[in-house]
Image (cartoon, rainbow, N blue to C red; front, side, top):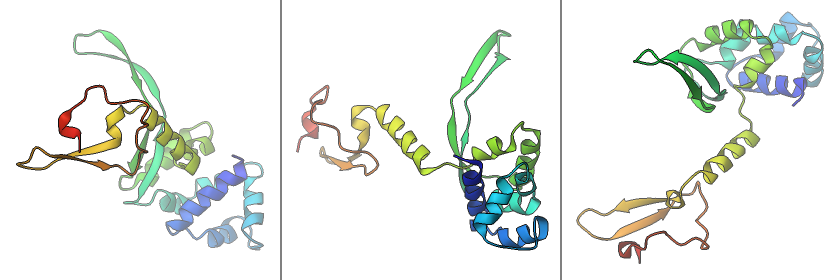
Length: 186
């Protein structure tokens, strides 16, 4: 993804939360507005995009209070002491977070200022369609055979009904269940 494409996605996300990009651009960068394409071209040259990233109006709209936002928390590894005083290595997997805390924009502005590359920092808050598809594919591969179905027990009856979960395709018929349970048949 190019810098210009990334800036475009950032502006679109902030605009959806109430950021007036045209007004900000005219007040901060250039009074003459010739269009979104030109504005993004100008912002993507050199370090002009810093003016956008560190703008309080942009940050407040991008990390809007109470918004549901998906972002990727990267994998981390660190060393700490356990209860017995032994040094252990902790490895945390990457995961997707979906909620924002109040006044998160101030915290993220500080973190972005400390980051070596602010665009790389803010990029983790944009989860693209392709990344969501990759996560779904990874999750499907790691699921056991019957997790594609939800089981519902009917109170007072020995009957069990299986309902297809729309998030996952039905299991292939190449792999029959490991144990044949007569209560699951028809």
